[in-house]
Length: 222
Image 1 (cartoon, rainbow, N blue to C red):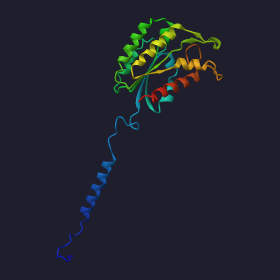
Image 2 (tube, rainbow, N blue to C red):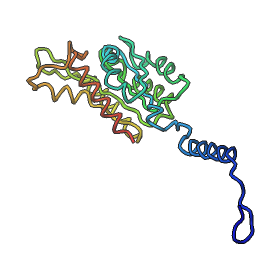
Image 3 (spheres, rainbow, N blue to C red):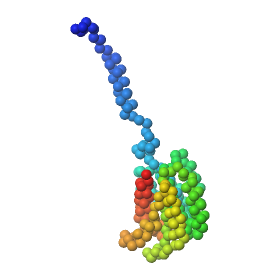
Image 4 (cartoon, rainbow, N blue to C red):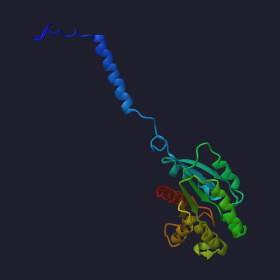
């Protein structure tokens, strides 16, 4: 076919057209697809290292159920251990291939009841936290500082002192304090019943409340 200017129109070539169509589709796919970012919450959940004693050990199932949908949970909790004893647990958690984004520490109850000198507990916590110098936030759980036989609270002076020492770590902007001791105080007059199965270990309801407190602290980390 000849145009009014005398030029010939090129003949249609189905193979060329098909090739161009395939290239266009491939280009569109490349534009829409991207390599998943490590910070993408859909492809990578923040990792949470939980370090503790029998309180976290007894609450493990609840903690995993409460936190597991949003965070990648790693837990090292062994009954009966003091803060000094769990330096090894901190080493195990810190040695994971992917560094933790958060550290939650629930230790000190055994220090209090075994009358470990406060300065020794502080040094042990310093050693633990030093192993997690890249985490975004550190969450420290206060310990039970009262005995509650028959719902009558009796102050444990060494527990009060330990919690005061623990709160002193909040001068580090990464540190959040999970006020478990205050939660227990507030619950003393709660008609729904106690949170502890004995003097220190949470019952089933207490584990849920503790798990919620940890989740709230984690969510507040920016």
